[in-house]
Every structure is written in structure tokens, then in C-alpha cells.
Image 1 (spheres, rainbow, N blue to C red):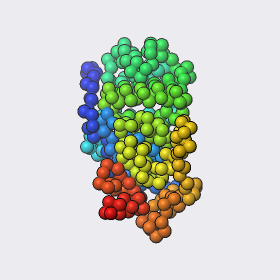
Image 2: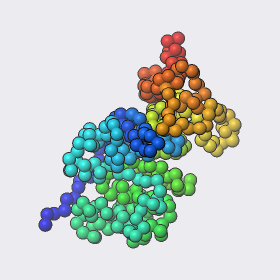
Image 3: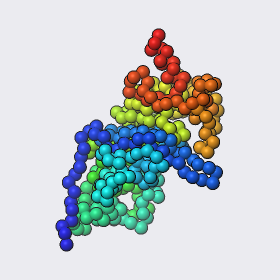
Image 4: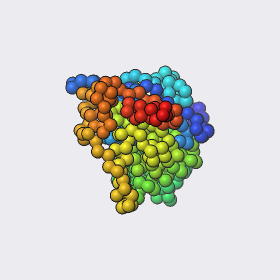
Length: 347
């Protein structure tokens, strides 16, 4: 019998490009017609960095995340891992991709098998692929992983079942499972949204520590810009609306100086705990509150029926391209804002 393969840790240098989405589209065919859930998305996840994908429910965030993780094949576009097209990988490359890119689901109550112990859940991949020699080594590895995600003492958790754990503890088990294969990219899909605020902050701190210690790259999906600000302050935010990225850039720029009207509306909806700042905060009034159906998208900019900056024959005539604003680091898709910036620069 061949000796089990024990993989050496793969720790890429900080800033290394790990996962790239180029022109990714995802269209679902339904009885009501085609549903363009994702329409030409470009994203890059780098080692030791966080890319937050934010937007309202139903805007295509999870569909994008599933395509990035290889759980679904996009209708068009390319997903690359370490520079290689995921769709063309051979069996060995596919296994490396599946081990290195791990998905953390939103619901900690549904993502764990109720009949498996914590030990069995965390070590399933290790045992399946021969990364541990025996049960004793598997338990040692599981204990190390639990301690890494702040479930201590680990021995008190190994033989428990999911129903014996709190929501926060379950999500930490899910993170430990994702780390078991020496993952390089974690795709966290609203992974803190179902937790209490205090538990949420604690879990975000754990994820931040793992990012810094292991150079793990994060694609972090959230509808909460307050969470994005806290977790991705040194990273980037990409704002999605109806399957398209409408604004993207370094988190401090997006939070402190939003340019797209939709981004401004999202930030204005974030609760401000300081009463003085809350009173000074300007509310963004939209033209309408109803989100267009994906089966009947409006012409031009899909945000124009709700946009306070709407200009007839401009916003409803052609979709604005996502392009650099003022030659800086921010990407923006808005006819009006881009034109105003260009005129201000000329002046």
C-alpha cells in the first residue's frame, strides 16, 4: 500500500494573485424567460487581502461566489486559479483547486451534517485524500484546527455534534473545515449575517487573524457595508447591482467618498450609533424603491429607474462602462458622475 501523501503547506506571498474572474456571466433559463443573474463581472482575489462584494439581496453576489468556487460553471467568461482556466484543469489540477479554494456558507445550522461529530466534519477531507496516516494524527490535526479558530480547549469540542454547539461555534467549525486542506482562498458567503453582533465581531477578528497569519485571500460576500468596512479596511470593496459591478476600489475610498448614487444609498442606510453623526448624515432619496425584475431589465443603466441623478436620453440609452475614475484606483459605472468628473478635470 502506498504511503499516504502528506502535503507541504502552500503559503503564497502576500499580494499574489490567486483567483481571477474575467467577464463572468451566469444566465438561468426559466419558464418566465432568461434570468441574467451575473452580467460580465471582473474580480481579483489576492493572497492576504480581502475583496468584499456588497449589494442588496438578489443582486447576484452568491451566484458570483459559487462560480468563483467552481460550484457552478459560468455561462460565459473565465475563472482562473493561479493563472490557469479552471474549466480546463486536469484531474490533479482540479483537486488542487478544490482543496485551495474553500466555501463558507451563510447558515451554520444547515452547512454541517447533523449526524457527524466535529472531529468527523473537520477531518473528512483529510481522511478522504490521505493527508493523515491514522486516527491519532487526524485527531491531532483536528485539535490544531479548532484551536486556530478559537475553539478551546479543542478536546471538549471534538466529539460533539452540531446540535450541541451555538451558532458562532458551528460557524467556527465550518471555518476549521475550510482551513483543513491548507486553503489559500476562503469564499465567505454572508458567513456572519446570522450571528449576534458580539459574536459577529469576534468571528471577524478570527478571520482577520487567519488572513494575516496564513496570507489567506478572502472573497467576502455581505449586504452590510458596516461589516465590509470593519473587515476589509485594508482591502477593496466591489458594489454590485443587478448582476453588475457599479463601483469598486479601496475600502477607505468607497466608504468615505462614495461616488456612485447606489453606493451612496447603501452607505446612507447604515445605522450610525453616534447621535450627532446620525443627525448630520444626509439621507439619499431614490426616485423609486422597487428593484427591477431580472427578466425585464430597463434599458441603459439598470439603476436609472431609482437613481436621483437620472438624465433622460443619457442614463436610459446605453449601459455605462465600468472604467477608472480620474485615472485613479476607483472603478465606476455612471454616465453622469464620470462626465462631471471629466468636466471638473478639464476646468
